[in-house]
Structure formats: C-alpha cells, structure tokens
Length: 117
Image 1 (cartoon, helix red, strand yellow):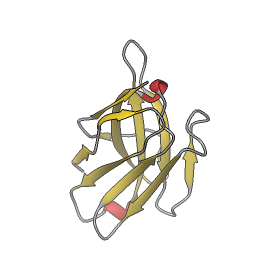
Image 2 (cartoon, one colour; image 1 turned 90 degrees about the vertical axis):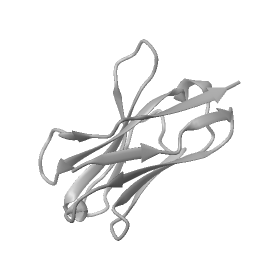
Image 3 (spheres, helix red, strand yellow; image 1 turned 135 degrees about the vertical axis):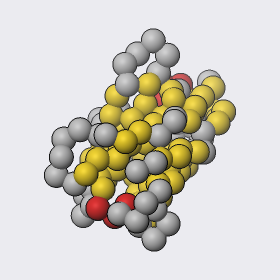
C-alpha cells in the first residue's frame, strides 16, 4: 500500500483544514487507517483511526474537534480538523495496517499543518 497525504498548510487559530490521504491498491477497504502527527521536538503521536468496520478512535487532545472518515470507492481517508489551535501545529502522517493487527506498517510522506495565533 502506498499512501499520499495532502491538504496541509498555514491556518489561523480557530480555523479548519481537511487532510486527505490517497491510497494505492485494490484492498483499501480491508485496511485500518490512521492519522498521526509529529510536532517539532516531540515524538510522533496518534491522532485518529478508523477501521474496516468504520469504527473510529481519537486522541483526547483532538476529540470533538477532529473527524476521521474514509471513502473506500476513492481509496481515500480524510481528517477534518476544526477549531485548530497552535498546539495542533505538526507534520501529519497517514498510515495503514491490516485489519486485526497492531502495528501500522505503511506510512505516507506527511503534510505540514501550521496554525498561527
């Protein structure tokens, strides 16, 4: 699976962005997908995930502000980010793992989100 993330940019605090992650391959629907982020000087952290049954999970820091979704017909996973704040500034990565497994094995190249105050 090859992943291509896009949609990052510079946004003012309080604004919204939608990230997209396009996946190659014909078995996209069988993968669990996730978004991670890495802020400057910090470790990469989990942001949101969606499994093949469309069950979602979120980090506490983004719950109620971010929404993950997927379009299996388009082989794409989205991250809608609302009420952005400066702490959301990071490089955002999408990732994929086979359903029922623990580790994300496939990673996109990352897209930078910068939130200004």
